[in-house]
Length: 238
Image (cartoon, rainbow, N blue to C red):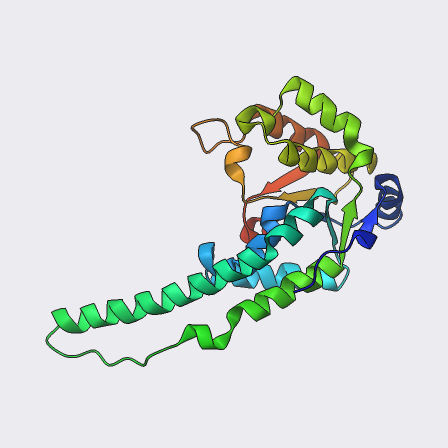
């Protein structure tokens, strides 16, 4: 697993000029979305894997920009090891559940159902997922956090989502970076939109609902941002 290095950080103005000179769609990752690649078996199936593979291909072939906040670097580096462990445990548990279900089937049916023992752990599936996230990270531009301090502070003062939900300052900073970038590249007037990817939907929903908050909906419309909650939605917006 490759730790994200600080040398990958860029000034938002510098990167904005790059985008203006060569327009492409932008996938803007929050930390959980990047970590979701490693723990893919937890919440996804083979259909979603096809979406992830296509997203990965678009990024490594430079057909879309991959972007995140500088804040994501420390968060990702701090949690990568535990996330790899989590992924291994999920794979092991699923293998054990399969064995248990087949034993129950054989107990309740008159004809014994033949099946082959499959030790999914031995396939080391997580190493393929780690390779994917590593290659995406190598192509990802991390925007310096200091430059969006004014936008971030304004969001804190106004208590806009995601702060309104649980006082999550890091989420607010990451979202502020995304809308700042969209503003600087004038995304609202372009066909190539920004895709913000976060599976942390509860931070952006209205309390007690599965609807995005008014703050988020308004800003998505104003800045031409598509909010993606999983790999399938990201791919559909490419």
